[in-house]
Amino acid sequence: MVDTRALLTVANDIVSHASGMFVKGVGAAPSLYKKDGDFATEMDLAIERFIREELAKESSIPVFGEEQGGKFNPEACWIIDPIDGTTNYATGNPNCSILVSLVIKNEPRIAVTAMPLFDKHLSTRDDEPVYLNGKELPELVDDSSGGLIGLGSVGSPDSDKFPIEFRLKLMGWLTDTHLRPRITGSVGVDLALVASGTFKAAMSFSPNMWDNTAGVLLARNAGAVVTDGLGRPWSPTSPGAIVGTRDAHATVMDTIMTILKL
Image 1 (cartoon, helix red, strand yellow):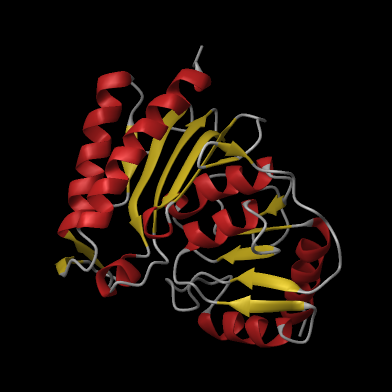
Image 2 (cartoon, rainbow, N blue to C red):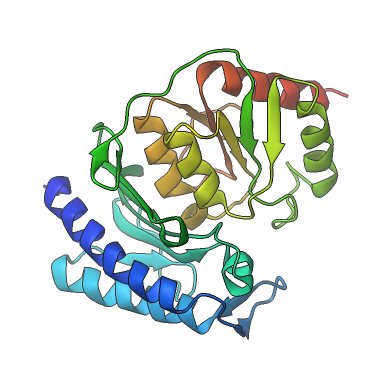
């Protein structure tokens, strides 16, 4: 049996230490270019290596990370994104984050998201509340008043379901609702801002579980509705995620379905 309470303490401590590395290295230049045109900095590699090594000291659970790979095991697996929003990080834009989650039996059970340049550290486990810098956050308030919706990055890897043309149309149509789109360049930041109540909703078009898993659990435990991009139950292998208050999530899904029917 996995002791999520103890492992959350471990993950929080590791990410807190990694946050110091993160702050010292901000502005790092690209050092590794990937096939899709994306890149990693030396700090991406160093932070992931550090987190992997520290997790290995505390548990035998395998690790799956953005930079150094591994194999996702739905039975039990740590998932790491050492720097979500690497382009932002390399240019000094504070919208970037460290994402660590633990999946057990294909469900996220632990989530830690640090936004070191904003001095924010969010964490949660199982069905427990979300904590921001050690203080419990209140559940999200559901109302139909205007609010912000995060889009992460419109230019993230294309997909058959959500090509860039669709994303641009969706962003335009959402401006005619009570929601106001914002592009931060970091899925992890967007999902964390939903959990903390800053955003009413967020849309991730990323097919990568290291981008989505931590933020999905944070948002869910804060009281948000969580689905995949088509309104189906979310899983770590889902292509993206839609999270938000009940009203905001319904607005996003209605808009998506209207566009898909055109």
